[in-house]
Length: 613
Image (tube, rainbow, N blue to C red):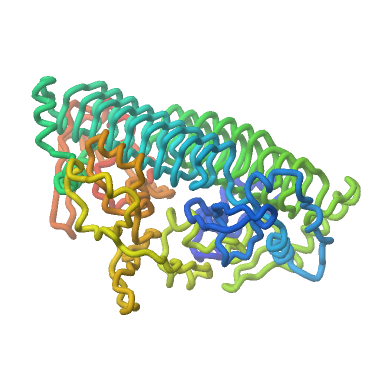
């Protein structure tokens, strides 16, 4: 039977369904004491993607880029050195101490043992990035698999010669695209597929040479959803003057209004029976999942899940031939029974481990590869291991870890955020669950203040050339002030110092590198006014939250009017054909990531397809 519980973090009630209890019984774990959203936020505090620092490898003295700040007191090895056999992870192990909570002992081990500078795999000339694989010539790219000559991207899989992209794949010569697939020579596209030579599109498929359009299918030479002849189309496009930053900004704002007034499908779910969430493709019987594809089945509360993952709960960046995974981050690749893990590839029966690959029957270990029957990096026999692990689980319940906010961590809880080597605003938690410094500290998270930057602004933001044609070659590598930064009032002796005026990890300044300038010229687009972090956060705002609301289809049969009392605005939508429910309101209900207070017109799949497909 379903059971309602109160989250010990946010104190809101949440429901554990009968199917959930079946899963917890299967993995022999207690039911969670945190609600799904708080569990997700907690896991994310252990994954830093974008915050990078310079340090020296303790083993080789080589200067490296790392995701561990000096404040974390983590011993850092160059990534290749960490993967080598030049050091012995067993030297840092310890016997289990039944006089200390388990999580204290794990954090002590994490403070002793070396960690890789970055979590990358087979990347060439791409050291300014993290959680990447098989990249070549990538700069400030994160959480991306495969690609070449890309800059300022995240989850930009199999892309080439592109800039400023998020959650997109198989695209080339693209700029500012979000949630899109198979694009070519296009810019400012969102939720689009198989489009070429287009600008400012939303939810379009198979379009080429289209501008400022929404919900089009297999069209060419359309502007603002109106058809034009080929020659007339190109003449009209010139009038928009996208090479000018001022004119481009005006077009952006106009398109935001157009997009808001357009039809929105309740969720981007394709070939995914009995599933809820958003951005799902080829998923089955999976609930409250986001960004999942390629045969994810019988799973729940998973984000960025892929490739034959079965019967798994509560994961971020998980999958690739995995089953029975629970409360894990960046874990998978041919394995089974991964519980409470971070950065585990391959293996089975791995519990509360970090960076252990190809291993089996592990508990509380860090950095061990191809090992078995280990606890806190100490080797045991099979018999010793099987006798000791139940005692440790009992000890975790009898002597739980209690954090500064009084939250209790027994066996079955993920690692406490206050023990993470990363501060809250260094992690992806800040992207999906943004907090101010005051809010983060009040909720028990650590916060990292921006490091003082020793630079002098060479080009104030408002002095950048408006038109790309007026940009000289000498702008390359000059320090440009970010439009989201403001002059410091705390340091009178340094009037050129900028401080962030937003909550978006603003770097306050940025540079244009040579390949980037050539890209803007090739695409005939003006220089950006924001640093790469602030641009990333603007793209994040185009995506819906990792949360679902139960709603009804808004189709009213004929005409629908949406009013915004706060803004004193309204807009209407008139159906183009008769729907299955006739002139009555649509009876369909669904789970959607569009909250009820949003202004978009949200239709069920039947009504949306009737109007668009």
